[in-house]
Image (cartoon, rainbow, N blue to C red; front, side, top):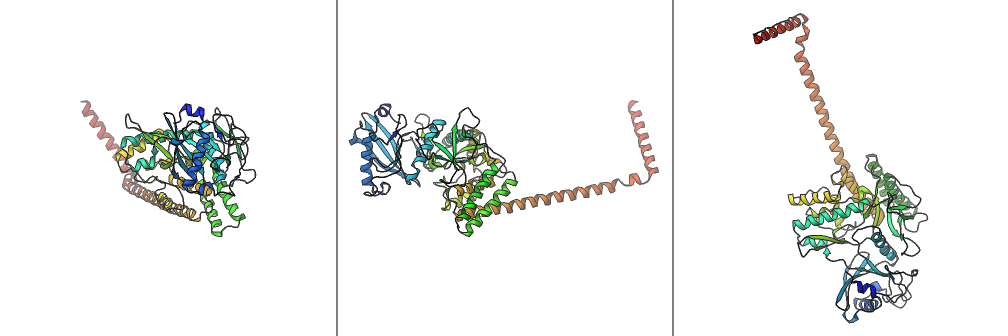
Length: 495
């Protein structure tokens, strides 16, 4: 973590660079005064990029010993390049992460979303120290600097075969974190984005972009307001709630309309029509009856969960959740995807891209929903998670259908033109319908068989009792004789 004295001395010389703990000037517009004379920073060779990073460190930490500063590439994801920075200031060594966005236009989102959530929730989100939305800096590129979260990512810990006790620790922590996300409500659903204009240092620096729309479309951004005492802490100003069914159906309708308007492939247009039919069938079955809109981390996978082992008792704890670039407010049932990799043999996915075989493999088990724990220990891990989260849709009816709805909304958001992923979802949906029809037919056959058996037994019973009521005279004598025998028996007993 950052030393307090280092924070005090960390006064960037560049006027466009912002610190969260200090007053800042208005942000500059997107421009790059160097782009005509230099190769884009993101594409530089490491030796050239390293020099620029060292110069940036001199600007951000002028009191540090520049001869001891260490920088090295850490990871490159689909949207960011992460670089480790070690700053030596006297006897203190502070560790940071420098993030460079692959696409400059998304730097506002990368800064605004974690900043806003860190200020409004207690979720374990890395602190942002500095950022520059422009290219007028030593890097000649937009950037953000964050505290480095201690530990390793959970996928590496799982591959290292952590013990049963450690799995229980993580299951409890993840349940608690997911429970907090479930408690953060909004009255509208959509994708959390930075405000289009204005300072990110304002009280509300984010807004909602509804499902199925593209940024830049007129009148589609929902301005958020914040009231921690309200029923919906993250309200959309002057907007009422919207039923879940409308959210789902509108998302598909928008994509279908856009595909028509832009003259896209006829197969894609037909695909969206089938998806609309699928969502309509889901709605008729009551799958979308839960209207609660909750916060959702769009990539809540093991690779974005940092964990660290305690030196005192060997417990494993979650130290941070990374990559909040895709943060959404979605219907509650879609935000309850369990971390099934904790209690199954399923490998913790490194991504959720629909263009890889991981999508098909994940779809086979509906995200692990149909895979039961293989051992009693694994079953205990699952129980601990469900007790910690307080609620989980894995045991509810239609869980597999809801998983497909979740994946389809991912397509709506991330790649509405992904025909392959859409086809795979629809094929899985058709198989589910066939299974359901067979189950319903089986149940119907059993009910018919039971009804037939009951009718047969009733007929047999009726034919057996019939002689007793045909001859009324004999029947009367029988009753009289029976009564007489009972009276004689009673007399003998009293005697």
